[in-house]
Length: 311
Image (cartoon, rainbow, N blue to C red; front, side, top):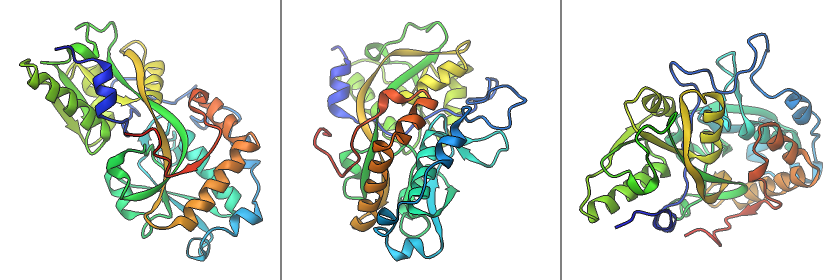
């Protein structure tokens, strides 16, 4: 039985999985060592030019506005979406630029708060105002939160340079695949493994790791044969570390990435949607994505809980 992309696309949706720095590899996102930041040149001026929109700011609940901060839950190890700058403490990336621009539209101070990925969604509404950390939409999360989509991303597998084992999605049975735990990419690989077993083939050895840095390192050092990540992160990792990693095939299963809002809080969701749409309409959003090389994922409209094309 052929374990084709078509079956994978039907059964699983893209989740959050990524690569930041990999031990023994060059640091993702870094430029010349004399630079003060790993952010693309000109990024600060793009985001800093965003001004408060009083009408949109008024849409936010007072519970969020009262402390003057827009607190965003983030797991900063997902380059280029969110990762730590050279100072080791400042979250940067295209998600963070969007989050900072949102804060500016609301007239609030941007307050990124680092956390483990799997703890962010449960903390929205108590610890965080929203979550912006590569969250993709899928049916399993539908009842857990409100989602305001603003980007499309796909999934990709990454292997060692030269693909020494000649891997494809159709022949992963019997090989070792690393994933970050509690992500939908873990489900992706588990689904492929089920297909292997059902076909009477060797099982995939799944390596679930808490940190994506370890996931990527395991592939680079040969402890795993491949890893699965979102397409933007996989592409960025290969670009930064092309002497040791390469993409395995093309990206597949494009899925919306979204700002996560507490379940039932449609007031905040509406304000976030309006702010995102403003950034899309005035060109700020496009400039942010282009600066990170992610313009291919751009969308024209921010939408709330749009599961139209999500199985």
